Each structure stands twice: as C-alpha cells, then as structure tokens.
Length: 294
Image (cartoon, rainbow, N blue to C red; front, side, top):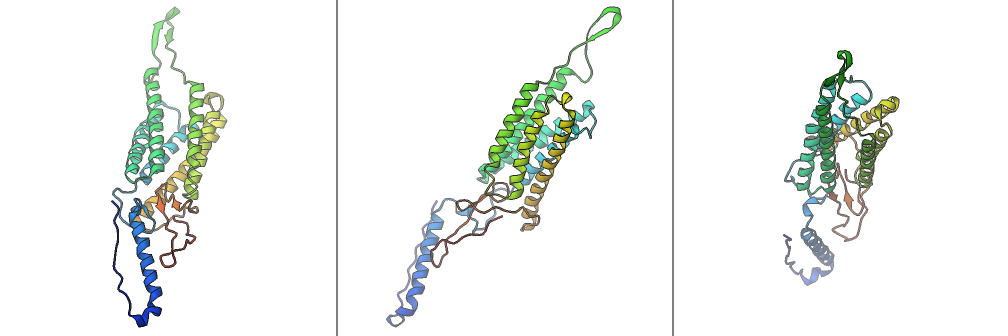
C-alpha cells in the first residue's frame, strides 16, 4: 500500500529569507521525491534500498543442479564414462532430482522473489531434465537391463526381443526447439552480466550441436565435440552459481561477473534478480547517468 509523506516546513524569518530560501526549496523537492518513491509498488526492489528479502536467493541451487547434471551427461557423450547401463541410470537419476526437481523448486521460489526471468528459466530447465530423465528411464525399463528372449528359434538358438530404438527425428526436433527457447532466453540477458549471458548463448549452441549429432552411433566424433562443449557450459554455470552464492554469503562480489549497463533503469543483477536504479538526484531533481549494478 502506498504511503504518503507530508511535513510542515517552518517559514524562516524575513531577514533570512534570501539565505534559507534555496534550502527550503531543496528540502521540499526532496520530500516530493521521497513521496513519489514510496508510492511506487516496487520500492523494495529498488537498488537504492537494501532489505532482507522474504526468501533466500535460490539462484545458486538452480545453477548448481543444472551444471552438475549437464557435466555428468557429457561424460557419456565424450565416452569418458563407459557405456554400461549403470552409468545411464546414474545420469537419469540425478537428472530427475538434482537437475529436474531442484531447478523446478528454484523456479517456484524465484516467483516469490518477483524474479520473472529466474522463474521461467529454472522451471523450464527443471521440466526439461525431468522429462528427459523420465523418457530415458522408461525406455531402459522397456528394453530391460539384459536382452529378453521371446522364443527359441531353430536348433535351440534364442530369438531376442528387439530393443526400443531412440526416435532420432524426434530427439533432433526436441533439441532444436530447446536451442531456440534458450536463444530467446539469451535475448533477455542483456541487462544482467557477461557470465549469465554467455551461459545461455553457449547452451543454445550446445542444444544445436547435440541435434546435429543424432543419431549418436553415426556421429561419434561430433558427439565427443558436443560433449566437450557441454563441459564448457557446465563450467560457466558452476562459476555463475558460485559467484552468486559467494555474494550472498560474504555480502560483496568476490568472483567478477562483469555486469552490463542498465536498460530502462533496470539491472538484471545475478540471474535476473531485478534492481531498479534510481537516476534522480534528490537535490537538483535532474536525471543522472547511473553506474551499472551487479
């Protein structure tokens, strides 16, 4: 609810009117500006007002969940991890909970922080990992850990059930679409910082690299390159999450993220945590050029 600030300014003695008239005008102007600032509904998002928010910053949780599962998946693509069924189960297990559920929770909590970008991004990638983990887990269950014998052939030679093949065109289309979604997210990072912007740009390229490597069996070298690129994406996400966490813990920016200039008085801060930058000088009432907010 907006709050109005009113005050009474005592009239100065007639003899001192010339010397105090300017001070009284500046005071009145300051009161008017304060009244206007209090009337704004986004007062406590203002970069000039420091308060403890209703919820903690969950950005590092979402970034760590994304980075960890992305790096784990690249172990398969680069063949650093072997291709045993247990490795796939490890990837999809962490993908369902740390990459999926943790990011989804982060997205829901970002809603309470009025962080639209964080809400949309974390919820989207959380749903992506949960959907990917569910699909691959179900395909593994259908295929079985070992080939299933359907019947005995001639001379006692068993006939094995054909495994459920990966839908190559479907996976390629899915990856292309996620690359487009990520590219659209990247277009919304220009008021944030270089690290976060680089994360979304490299992630969009990763989706398209993975799409170009389908089917994996026919493009092993390309998938190794895509996996190495995925590790770069994971590193940037780890760095971004660590920078945000250290800022919350120590109260200052320890790891540089190279903030961009504000756009329309809005700074995206760390992963979309908005700060409105006040550009009005209280004494003169004139607009001043603000410094970029981290």
